[in-house]
Structures are given as structure tokens and as C-alpha cells.
Length: 129
Image (cartoon, rainbow, N blue to C red; front, side, top):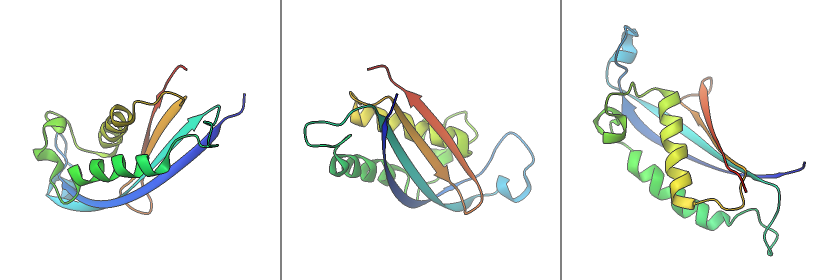
């Protein structure tokens, strides 16, 4: 089976501190310059030859990023009781993007979240069409 992928990238700065363990300086409030890659996959294009409308994606993505830009993740309700590391943050971003777009012709939606040039986490949602 073949499929198409389309990706959009945004970057933003957010703050956090890790909890529940001794991670040295990571336990202190600090910022990361995150890069979020959102990757959409599906088997067919629409009547315009698109997997999805990138302009619509960009609008949703900008609103999503604004929620976290320059904020302390630990203070946000979606992180209540969570260690705000890469993996939970990637999941939260991915689930938020899926709710905003309500994908109908996609088989998967992946968020790849970089916290620096060396470290990233991904979270993938799969959909039946």
C-alpha cells in the first residue's frame, strides 16, 4: 500500500522543570527552544491533489504553539501530575492537533518534538479510514 506524507514545522520556546527524580539542573526552571514537526500520512489525495490543506494546518498549528509559547509547562492543566518531558509533551501536542483537524482521510498523524539539536521524541496516532 502506498501513502503520501506532508509535514509542517514550527518552533517555539517554552519553560519547564522536571519532577519525580533527581535530574540535576533539569529539576530547575529552564527553557527549551522546541522544534515541532507535524507529519500527516494518508493513502489518497483530495480532488485538488492535496493530502490536506497546509494553510488550514498552519492556522491550527499556530494556535496550538501559542498555547505553549513562553509558558511554563508545569503550570498548565494538561500537565497536572505529569513530568513535562519530551514524551508526554509530544503526546499532548499530537492529540491537540488531531482534535483541531478531525482527520478524515489520514491514516496517521505524528508529532516529532525536538528539545535541542540532539534529542527528540515522537508520538503517532493512527486512524482507520
